[in-house]
Length: 221
Length: 221
DNA sequence: GCTACTTCAGTGATATTGTCACCTAACGCT
DNA sequence: AGCGTTAGGTGACAATATCACTGAAGTAGC
Image 1 (cartoon, chains in turn green, red, purple, yellow):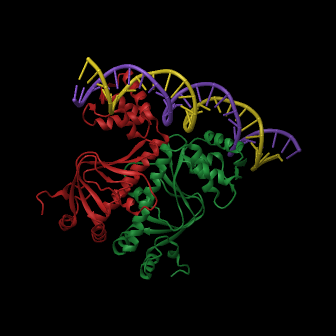
Image 2 (cartoon, chains in turn yellow, cyan, orange, purple; image 1 turned 90 degrees about the vertical axis):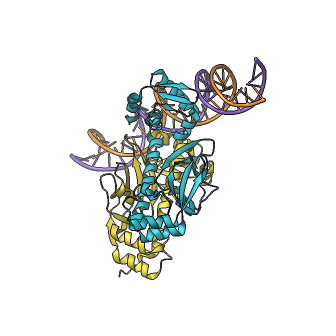
């Protein structure tokens, strides 16, 4: 058994009885990938279930022309259920998962996955919870894109991206790809935020100087 | 056993061995609902898995102001996995499933569902396939809303709604709610379609007079 | 240093879509 | 027919997207 009991870190699996965790350790393969690695995509259909041990995966969708939109992120401790959808889909679709940092993933072969689902109720509910969370994430995206204002969404995203910090390192294009809009739109709204004293910009860098105000804008939906 | 072997009609369960079908019949409850019945929604969280035996359920999302968007439809033979997401969600969200016709549903109590998933591999893959299909449906919605042109989406929807027929019985508001846009937008685009000889309108009724042309518009993405 | 090259950001013009206000036409009802 | 309700039309304007540029800021080579 490995020195690190990695299953400890999987959200929702904390309550798993000891033997279940050991079984997970037994059948899973640990893989490392560099930042930028495409975990799955239209041209790269995996045949295994993927759990993320460390790092984050950005799952995004690409349009015919150059625009992107981020659907959700997979954080450490979560599983990437779109890979299963990916496996089952016969019609083409253009979602892809890319490592946003160096990542360490736990690869669970389809057969082992199937057996664990069958035999371990706790694992089963973990998997269904993962699916449900993704469905709800997507509902949120639909809601935002269909009904949300761009300045509200941008403010919200800035607050999320900055985390506990004060600075964000991202180009306008990066942020446009997050929100599924065009760079020019982001440039204009950011310009407006700057005029209002909410942020300070420099090339590839945004400093949030009035986080509470941004949060207030983000809440106004 | 009922006279009708309804499990025959469930897509993806055709290959189930006889005893599995019998077990489904055993534990499931059949319920009838009128058109307009809310199968699930923010105020109405079910505690069972729902399979649709007959009719269709429209799953849509409502915005803060009056706008709606249709996420997908559940047809006979499919399961409504959002109900499970519904059950698991702690944060509020505003999706609802409404019977679009009189429906007959098969209600599978959570416990029975769990047991079937555990014990019947065929049932298991049926359920995962259902989840995946919904995820992919939602990807399509995101793609349309974020990147699609409204005239293209409208033409597409008209062709789908008309089916093998030539007429659609729906108000502009109905169609706007399908696509997540405003009535005025639909009115204008339909007016344009009419001027171009693609459709003929009367109150609450649209006749597709040039379906091939509409299909051509729908394909132009 | 300077130059060439690339990436990033700003901006005006225009098209598309959404919002608001108000109007008219069609239908159902008594 | 008269009346109320719903469906649909339209102009004005706001928000967002697209296009075609511009210059500014970094980067690599010399």
